Each structure stands twice: as C-alpha cells, then as structure tokens.
Image (tube, rainbow, N blue to C red; front, top):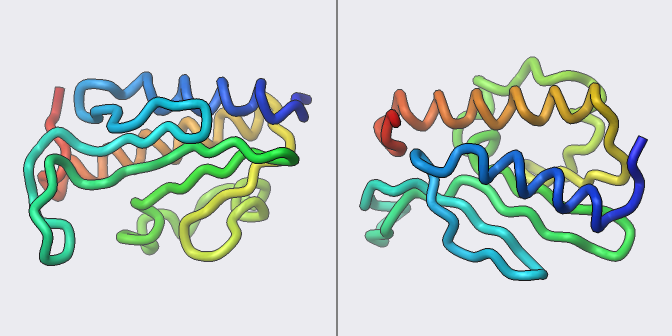
Length: 127
C-alpha cells in the first residue's frame, strides 16, 4: 500500500504516459501532467489541438486524477470497481489517498476503456 503523494503521482503519470501515441502530453510540470488526443477537433465551440483526456495533480495529502471520459460518457463507466468509485469526488475527479495493486489495476483498466471509448468516437488515433 502506497500513501506517499509523490510516489502515487509518479505511478499515475506513468499510467497516462503509457498511452502516448493516441495521447499527447500538453503539460508535464511538477504541479500537473495533462494529456489530450492528437486529432484537432472541436471541444465545445472552440477548436483545440486534441480533445482533453486527463490530468494528474499532486496535492499535499493526495493525488487528483481528473478523468474526462467519465464525464463525457458516464454510461460507459457505470460499472467501475467500488473501491475506485469511492475515490470519485464530483463527476470526473478522483482523489487518490492510497494506492495498492488492486486499485492500480482498476485505474489502468479505466484509462484503457477511456482510450477505447474516445477512439470509437474518433477523438483519438488508433495507434
């Protein structure tokens, strides 16, 4: 069980970075990692160079995972694991206070499902 926010931040960042190809990293700073697609598209009424996907933000007592696919396609994620659902605060922000192999697996699967969902909607490339 890992409870150190710095260690959890690195774990979550690596989970997102595993999907570089369909995703691009827009920001990679100490305070935030932001990932988006690589296909220029409209996000709302604004043209963007890739649809927003997720961010990882370390905080003093936890790490925040902002995961946009759960906001745009909530029906796809209605069956996420209860221990992951417990971390969800609001519509798309997960507050990760501790992480173990089980939660790591659930987050990895959720990210993969988000990638697949956005690829089906042609918001991400299929690399």
